[in-house]
Length: 393
Image (cartoon, rainbow, N blue to C red; front, side, top):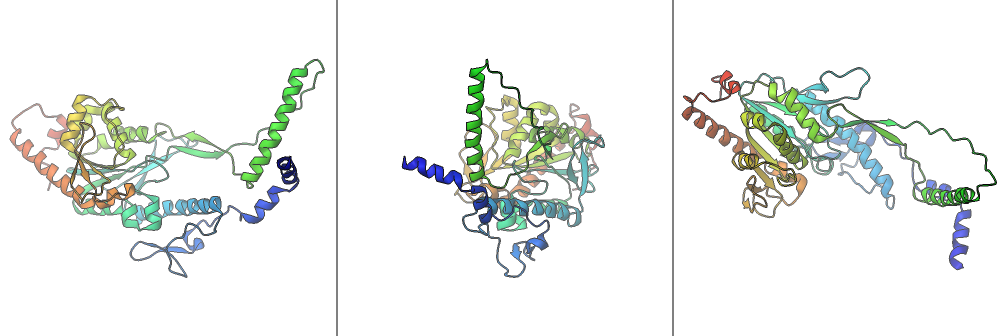
């Protein structure tokens, strides 16, 4: 009975008001300047007055508010990285779908000036899933460590220096969020006296709704907007996006050798692409570097021939306590696994950066030697023959 007295007391306190006093409004700055943060010379995010690194727990005991603040900063970081891709890396934004109409939602990828025309080499970058957008490996690293470890910019810069065209994918931009219109309130239905069961149910509904509202108020004083998602045509998932970019861009690019870096879920999307476009991928792709990929050749029904191709042309740098490039026991008969020299999943791409470019150079040499020796054979693809002696490295 003490419990009920307590509940009774609680129900009379306006929790809504109580909580609101505690939690500041969920409105946050829209720019880095207003947030009072800036990226310094080393690409680290620092407070403009104190010079301190980002602090997640800006307000003790206000986890939701801290999380929302972090997400707001994350959105700004996303825009900042797009800007770097355009200004620092001279990449061009290309809208998807390619035949987008005025009124439908859209996504985009970034291409270097020579992405479609470079006759020799093309590098395709595929990130993992989640909140990261084009140009990012890990938002957490960008905010807490630096731009080099968390963005794809070092890969883009190095690739351009080494004569690659570059394509930066955007596999997580899958839908447009729109605010859901408020539901019209239904008119009260006349309560007929010959329906006691229904009447009872209604009463129960009202009671449970009261309880629900009470808990809802207590837990979530500031209502978040209700949104619905409109999928982007033919780019509604990371897998769909990669297939779309392959069909509309990679397969039409001039480069005779395509190289792919795929982090985490990107590796799964790549295996999915192979299941859909096996012959094309084998014909065009020289080497694939995965970093802590979550693909699974069994769950994804990868054929024997795909598994064999992955063994030859793919390496997966995985999170491991072993030194960089130490072979790690393969779990399934697919690509060889090497240590990325870190146990942190999101750091694997940055830590294996040099090894990946060395792996690509070797793969290219091996491919060229193989091609020299089989030059007399006429069964080679028309595409390869078309760009026979165009490569200038």
